[in-house]
Length: 242
Image 1 (cartoon, helix red, strand yellow):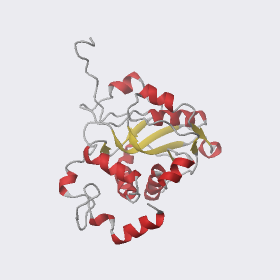
Image 2 (cartoon, helix red, strand yellow):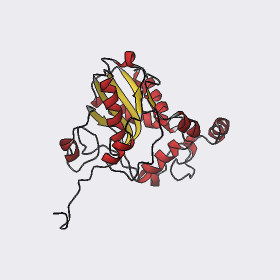
Image 3 (cartoon, rainbow, N blue to C red):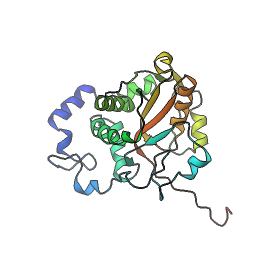
Image 4 (cartoon, helix red, strand yellow):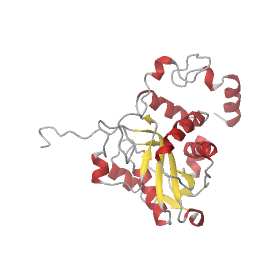
């Protein structure tokens, strides 16, 4: 959908008149009562490092085994159920959802120490032209307006498109992202505490790849915030694995 068509669509069909998940008329809310039940809010037990939902309020086994390079991560939603549809809509024309997501993330930022600036996960120019916007960038800008912390635009660039990562393990994703990101604004980032913004946290490979680049560029600490993260589910070995 072109930018003009999107604008016309939002003028005549405002986002708060229909459910963003199922599309039925709601007249005043963005999500109907039925679909609201399909959204899991990440407000229970979470890993204090990666911020993912856990069964107990303690550091998850993955973070114990491989401490992330970022200091801490937060996400207001669990990446399942209706949230999957919301994120898909956000990436495919529903740019207005950035405002709702920014509200949710901003409420979670109280768990972070003060940081100096915000950066976002980049897309290649080709991918951004195809989507017509970078969902991480516009989310970062919306958060910036709420907390009065500047976004350093184009602090990072993505040098090449990568293969689909949904079915890949952390190790495979890390290899897929090897030498994929580059820091551009070294002077503006040096000795700063930085908030990195993206839409979804799955294995953490993207955050790790970017955090590594930022730290090498002289950033002091990196904090990570996303709209949603996958629930941490420890692998339970069966008899054949033992």
